[in-house]
Image 1 (tube, rainbow, N blue to C red):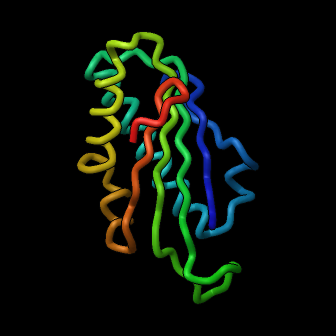
Image 2: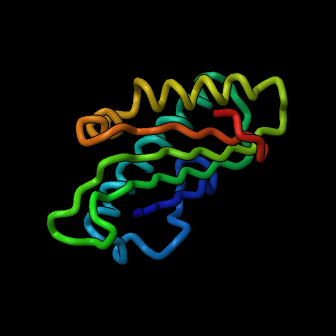
Length: 131
């Protein structure tokens, strides 16, 4: 299992939680592309829908066909896990809608990853698992 986690710093600024971009292996860079696309798309959706969030983390995991990183191993499944802090309870439904639209429709990298394998969605708002 490979995982890349991004933390939102405000505006369009995202930081990789573990390591630096230059430290990531090639397959992890694929996950980073999905994480950035998903995060930036979701942030744009939050803004457009006027959903107030104060914290946002995107974790993308990919399960490989082989337990160890080998040249012939490939991803067979992905999981997009979004963790959001939303101070206004009336905005929680908007958070879920924005993330669902991001996952299902608007993130182009996610659409490409679906050609490799299924992309599962997990949503956590204020530490409560929604999906």
